Length: 378
Image (tube, rainbow, N blue to C red; front, side, top):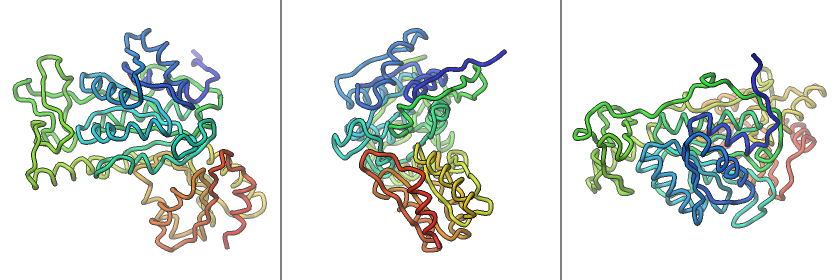
């Protein structure tokens, strides 16, 4: 039996991926260029018994999904630059309270209102450093419509597995372009369930580390489970504490649950890198131009290859360090003023030069620009 095939926009694929992952609550607020996600969810969620709510603003939307997640729902919100800025305090709350949720953010020009209809890749640092304090960060950067569908599913799985907010950040080109997509059959892609408590309500502690770095999360109010949730540093029972040793251990655990599982979380693509002397590092729609440029370089006898970042956070440090030890140089095209390039510089530690192509004018980086920069690597 042939699989279902459709011609979808990236944002439409994101909504369909969320439904496949079991999303049953969406809280959002319209904002270009991500509004199509909310439009699709408003139509499709009621068909499967889910709930859609448009809140009064982006702050309310983030608060709504956190509340629904604590009550047992799988949740998502969608936004873009200014909305992501508004959500940051509550994203931090989701991190410290360890609430699984997915934030789908379409990157557009900024800062502030910037260029609402133009593509950008300038939110990737916001995904890790946007909210204050030390906290875990997982951010996925898809490069196609099919991959957007699949990465949204993976985002739900990671949020449930590690009990933390997860961001999916396509750029505007990926979000709005249309491509053929093949829908997986039910069960074909694994969907991670929430780890439920195995103790009775009277013994349950929402941050009980005897179960490991990721404690089970009960559905608040279901089956008699009621517990304290706070944005303050807390003890295992969820109530606030200022005891230095507890605060230190808690903060370290929350970051460790991601940092200790980098190999499980980080995904990437290597293209013609086996013998490459020049490594083009790209992500999102820019990687499509990069692939073309690498092919053109090969035709001209230049040994170029591409390292495509699928998981921006945690950053693929280990892989970039290994590349730096054997290539003549890096070419880093990105629609910002050098955010990824700085991470590569941190890992290269002076072993290989880094040549950047940085555009923030609302236009995509084309293959010819990348090819010319490849030729500059000596």
